[in-house]
Image (cartoon, rainbow, N blue to C red; front, side):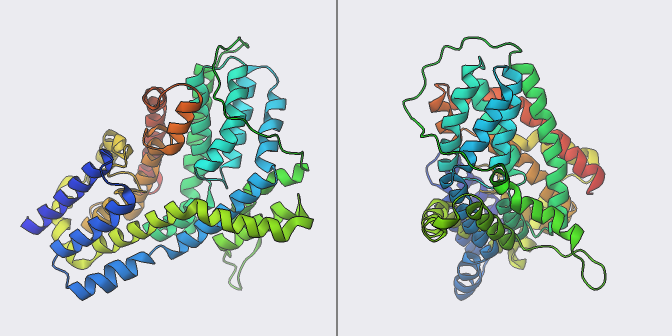
Length: 431
């Protein structure tokens, strides 16, 4: 066990502390960590500039491009009133029955967030969804939890996330889709469990001081326009079933192409005469919305290259190999016990330290790469729903007059069930 290897582990711990205590944002912590690790590993200065900083900044270029197109699609869905119409249609279907309303609204939110993302979209949808849920007698903290769980379920099928997994985790699309389907089914089943346990069967009068935020109702759109959010997802899953190459192998449509088709479909089915202005404004505002995520991906790319470099791997692998489990039972226990480390931008959060930790685990060679990736995608459920540091959790708590800790306590047991079932699935079918 080398001194350099121990120092690199301490660097991870130190920067994790800085992010958890909010003394340094992930935007700055990740590239800083990459540079420090490269220096400790003994990489030459010119090598750090070119192979860690320069190459790292564009390491996730595919995911960055997908994020931009995803943000443009989200703007189209917002501006055309598609998301507003999906939510209101779901509310009408539910009537005044709390469980029916909860089911319809939450799965409508999931449908919307197969394409949407970002705090702006959460606020836009939340200002419609939360009053509807609470008006039928659902407790504010339960309504907040339903919004977050619906958002998370949709995120499991969000093609922008698929692009990130491809670039950061080196997963092929077939593996990503198999994870998404299995994890999505598990999350949906646990969501149903949450609804039937926590939502009242009959409508009651809710005492709730609603936030002063208001929402302007958008005009109605055609029923087929409501399919816009899932067009990219459908293309990714259905295209290979239809189109084959000369050898009969499935042809996979590119993620960006799928989102571009979704963008054009959304405009042409709602406001075709405004295509020029709508597309231009959506591009400008979409890029602005996704800028923080792009900055984060630059830092993640640098960290990945610093950790995956052969000099770093040689120092870290002996240490990591002694920690990681070698059996399937040990694998399940290891990741379910440590899964709360996905909270507070911790080491199992793929959008923080998790990408670097995944690279370290893979370099150790103890566990199959797919098992490591599956576990980290699984623990992302906890981060997506429960993490008090998420801006969408903070806003949701504010809007419902609850607090992020209360939401954490209410949702964490259910998300632990999701993670456990996800990891068992990986151990049984992806090992």
